[in-house]
Image 1 (tube, rainbow, N blue to C red):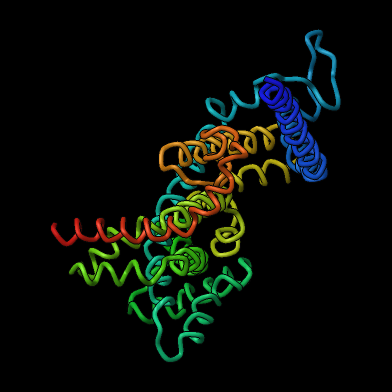
Image 2 (tube, helix red, strand yellow):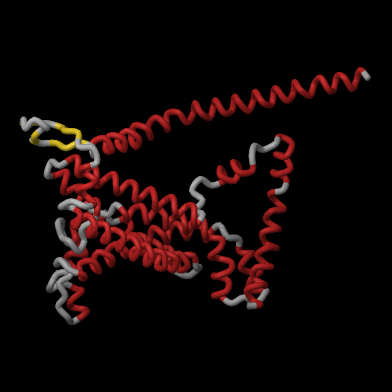
Length: 356
């Protein structure tokens, strides 16, 4: 009886110690993350709140309810947003909104296809692979303004593009050809970014998986569709998400290549910049706030619908709950068996592909 009573008395003490250790780890993690969170609050949180406040004010001379002239900032509520959607600036807003969406859809789609192709080429073992990788990554290393100037020289009336086509096209004028020029220049520059991230995902795939697929009789297309593509999906989704967020705030490339205040290539960022340069900060802040909400909505839908794993293992740990101390060693010891299970699963997957 004494032995049993002693063991039952020790168990609560061990449990308390384990709880206290977990709390200490959480406090240490919060302490270590506090500088980063403080910097994010100052760099991201404060500008967002300040821009939202600025969008509710108007700067300049005006008349109050009694007819007196009022100078400085005036609180106008949602008048700036009403002017954007329904006022005299509504036409410019919807045009810029359509251009931004068009550039995002077309460029990201083309960049994804071309980037995956680049990654597959860079992964192959052949003579001169290092030179090919370096040449593919050169466009990404060129600054955007310099890239815009280079493509502007190519798309001149007497430039290389018209010389190759044998037809005079006004690429840098205001029209659909200007949109095509921006899409070509953007895809040329940023496709290597997706290719680089996809290449990193390809190099994480064990060779045994592809060898098992070949043994099972899967063709090259089947291996890509049922083995390669599912395994690189996390890296590919993150790359596509980053590119979408980047294109949604496009400004410098169309401004350098075609010019500002051109309806065919005018984006939401350009509208915000134009309003700010004309000292209409309230309207500019309204454009910026709408663009911020649009980007946040696109990112949220992309993560929720397609399952882009931005936070990695943290989501799985949170869904599964806190890990038990007794299972830690078992999980560590099971890492070696996980590789074998993954290989076995790959064989079954490729067998299904070969059957089709």
